Length: 316
Ligand code: NAD
Ligand code: UDP
Image 1 (cartoon, protein in one colour):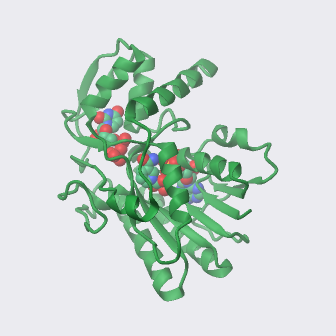
Image 2 (cartoon, rainbow, N blue to C red):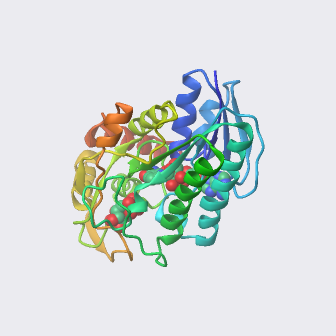
């Protein structure tokens, strides 16, 4: 049994990770300030005596004896990370410094939840880990993109300077149950709109692409990465290479929900990447990992989750 700290543990991905780690017999501490996380996500875990919950902000130091740290604390949806961009940078940068300091002190292994956003609006397609990216340092998305890039830098620096055992994964668009119904991301927006018969809002012409990964596949990849030996630290892409236009996603969601919603077109936000698709050759080779859940199968489970949420609380 390991004692494991998950920052951002009440968030979408964090809550799935905490559950999986508990299921595997570990002791888990969820640390969260509930900016975008929801208590509802971790309520089912509270009756497990090996689960602890801490309300804390990663921009302040936190001390605890643990064997492993998964550093996920950071708003991930563009609406939320742009709400207070200075705080977003602080969360990524000061959060990384505080968690790396902790890992150094207690000799814990630490994994950083980095992102495909480090590639920006990519000029290389699909994106491989050796691509340095095409990021606007002063744009709307830069608080998130550059914050995550500096976090990767800090992870490498702590590893090289202080021999901290690090792991870096670059996560591509992930979806599934426990996403916040109003977090503004495309999968949750489209499903909520379709279920309520509201217009489906496509930004731009809908020809931009994304690769959608179901959360269970990601959690499997995270665990496999944490389990690798000291000779592999990443960064490694963890995503589903299936690539879809946003219009295709909208049509799929309308079809699968049987909704009467109409598609409407709204302006494309600045710096919105035109294409995104992971090259997962490295993950296959080093982790023996590849995603298993097809988009329809994952959407089915996610639609069922949101249907249930609406049934339980009509005010959502
Ligand atoms: P989320 O917003 O659901 O979860 C983030 C969690 O971090 C929330 O519970 C939030 O309350 C918490 N948090 C935010 N700021 C904090 C702070 N200062 N101190 C403590 N807790 C704080 O998002 P998610 O989709 O679960 O993303 C989790 C991580 O994975 C993030 O670091 C994100 O950047 C990364 N990631 C996610 C995706 C994706 O598609 N979901 C893609 C790439 C990277
Ligand atoms: N998007 C959209 N309608 C929405 C929400 C998002 O067309 O209601 C588009 C958005 O402009 C982007 C893509 O869907 O091109 C993915 O957006 P999301 O916010 O989910 O993630 P990210 O842009 O960070 O990949």
